[in-house]
Image 1 (cartoon, rainbow, N blue to C red):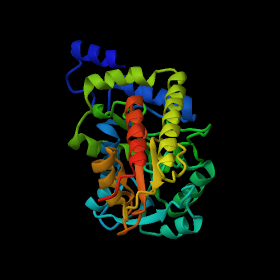
Image 2 (image 1 turned 60 degrees about the vertical axis):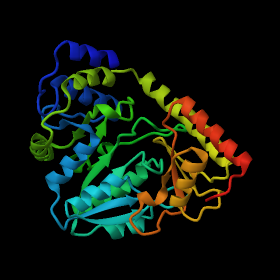
Image 3 (image 1 turned 135 degrees about the horizontal axis):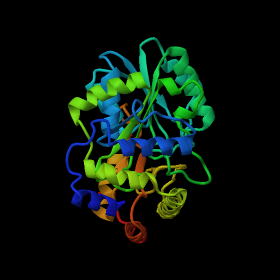
Length: 348
């Protein structure tokens, strides 16, 4: 894939591409979705290549949302979801993912839908929890979307990072959701090229036309030589994805063991590359205090859990750690945590 990018640059693939994405790339995306999800997409009218999944998500929201529309977010959430919704004048409604298994209460989900609901945002595997929605949970969401005529925006960037024999299911696969789902995805997580900013939106033709109207006046097109290399990436064999998930599963287990030995309680992570934990036995009162302590006294960085919740103080007993790192980085973190535990460093 990296060689293909270099060759494309040297071969002069350095001008604007087709605004909706290079035709070969859109065909490769369609072929991959058909092979993995059993869903046939028209590259000409249902696939749009964007500058990363974030642009894709922004394009969808700008295409459909009006000020005052309601959007349903599962909490904890990837922080960009809320920021985008608020920037567009939307009103968020939250459905809590409950510890320890990060499940939602169907009664709470049902209560979140009403005649003002424009869309619901899904992220499975989920950032920050690692939750992978089951087919039954997806079907629960689907029934409500169909009942209330609501669009589903499904962020599936971690689709291949699933562990313990689990399986990712796309909302596109759920009966009755093909015509009311927009999937956003990217190369960033699956191929470790987050700086390339190559993403895509899968949506029915009418919605795709609206998304393309927004995309045309924002970025116009994604980087042309990197689109050419993306074709190579999307054609990698199934063994690549198996090896990727197996490697990250080992990294998860390594970090979880280290954090557990250091006094943290780690919540299940079925996918993605994050572990959510409690505050551990460091004696800190809040997640922010512990985050500062870990950086300044231990040399390990983590994200305070409250960053993923809307309510003041909510999530303040949680921390998010990332295991999507090189083996040497994880080993260094393990050693620093062990050294801190041996030294029993005071807080402050």
